[in-house]
Image (cartoon, helix red, strand yellow):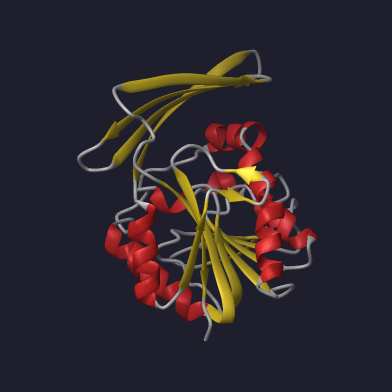
Amino acid sequence: MEEYYKEDLAFIHDVGFNDYALKSAPGILAILAQHNIREGLVVDLGCGSGLSAQEFTKAGYDVLGIDISESMIAMSRDKPLLYETLRERVYARARVPTAEFRIASLFEAEIPPCNAVTSIGECLNYQFDAKSDRQSLINLFHRIYNALNPGGVFIFDIAEPGQVTQGITKGFTEGEDWIVLVEKQENQQQNILTRRIITFRKVGEHYRRDDEIHYQQLYTAEDIASELSRVGFQVQTMRNYGQYPLPKAHVAFVAHKFS
């Protein structure tokens, strides 16, 4: 299977694009408190390098993070392998020593009984494996509903159509010893966003180049809210996590399980 968020892109994402996870965390913690969820297990799907998990554990929650990118999970040097199965590898991380992290597709990973499930940063849009289709997304909603304890919540966000209004957009971001170039194009008939990503990262005296292409299936807020309601959730949508506004054409959901 092709790798995504490999070593250099994972590093750049962690050091250069951490605002989404860190600035959304206070709003997410406020949502948990509003639903009287002040402890217990939070399962973070598409956990990346553990930034959200870091904030959740600081607030007193137990955290299980799941991500398909081995480089994201294994960012720090102190990363002992706890155990390995045919479907996933499970690490402990130095960044969040009390949390548990698993390398697996969020569409396949086992979700244990928990008080909350989160997925921050349009993770559910990504087409990273053969399981990431619409039916698998609906199946995931059912699995999350079944895993949540009564009163539990599922908090996540998605990218909607309208990421690129026409043509191709190109841009770059640079930091200390790295630069990332991104080309975006949206197929408005199929609602598919294509991101071509080129990274350059300094290694010794030279810069190393790597390339990735990411595809996202874009969904409308109305469509996702309807599917969540069919599963049994009470659904609320928003354009921000607390004081942190979401990017253009993004929407967040709070799906509440009453019983």
